[in-house]
Amino acid sequence: MTIGNLSKASGVAASAIRYYEAAGILPVPRRTGGVRDYDAGAVHRIKLLRFYRSGGMSVRSLAAADRRAAVERRIAEIDEGIARARVMKKRLERSLACECHGDLEKCPLIAQPSSPSIR
Image (cartoon, rainbow, N blue to C red; front, top):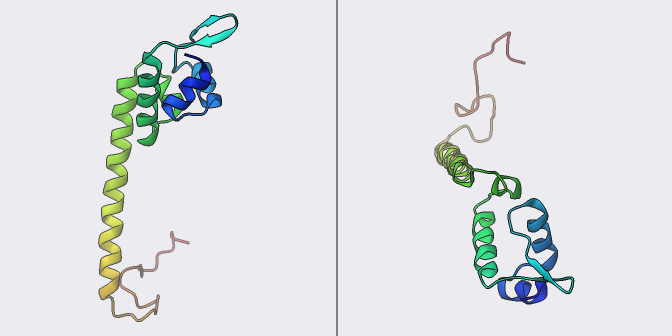
């Protein structure tokens, strides 16, 4: 199939398909008369790339020799983000109960003891 047909079938712009080829994450297809001729599996490969990209994977990480390790690193990054978000959610929930009434100097949630080393 041509790059235009692949673009329509996969929902990815032809320029993105060419970029994926140049980055080494999509095999360069054979050419027939100078025109790219993709096999039927190309649609599946592009949909898989879209799946990884929707999960925040960079093109660079997908081009890595060990894609499994790249996916594992991304999962760890997501877990760290979730942990930070949970902490922030708890802090924000506590702020709703704070009785400082906007006085930042009296707010126990953000007030910190004075320290000469902190500026």
